Image 1 (cartoon, rainbow, N blue to C red):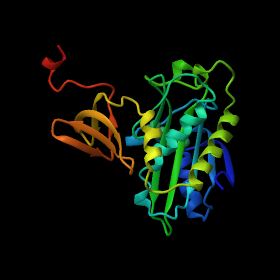
Image 2: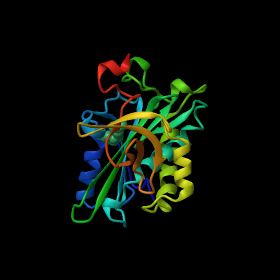
Image 3: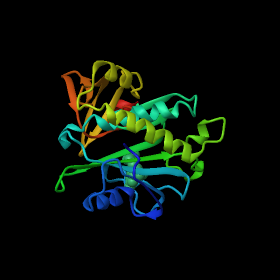
Image 4: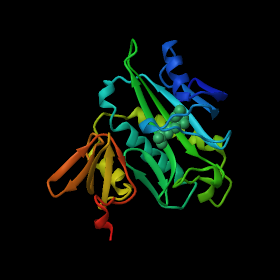
Length: 249
Ligand code: BTN
């Protein structure tokens, strides 16, 4: 079961680091590490995740998957979808998933996911989740929001935590490395900028195309004049970016 045992710290460097350390010490599958504050919180693409103490939900789940680590690709976007389900009971704002795994309310990021794996002696994955629960708006980065900001009633961080862990437990129980058609359809119905022209930056390479959906392995399908590109890594930029300045006029 995910969530047992559950560790809670006032301050750590990163719950990802603590989860890896616990894994080295033989910590069991399902262990959760939660912190009120991280001094070196990590995000995707080498970014940091900084939140003032107590205002964001920050935790990591230690997984010891039965499936090979390289098959975990679709897990992140499924977790984003599960988070969006949970958040829908806190907000009536439009919930979207920005590929590969950001959850957005009304186009603003409310939650991020960081999945890291290590072969160790036996394979380990650490699934880190950050949710802006009631982070004051002036302390949020640009294009970010919080659950509280989009809710009419008080949002209790411990309740969000238990709702999310419960939902992740259900997801993991049935988890398979390939998305089924109905799962793809559900995720695509929430995909941010579906059908729109975007730029995707991957290791300094820019691909422009129209978001057509995702594959059964969670890759992004981008369409351009040459056909379909399957993207497994990278970051969608906000809106199409002009290749040369004259295009923007
Ligand atoms: C992203 O949006 O780029 C991913 C952010 C993931 C942040 C969480 S907070 C808990 C866990 N510990 C970390 O250091 N990072 C993840």
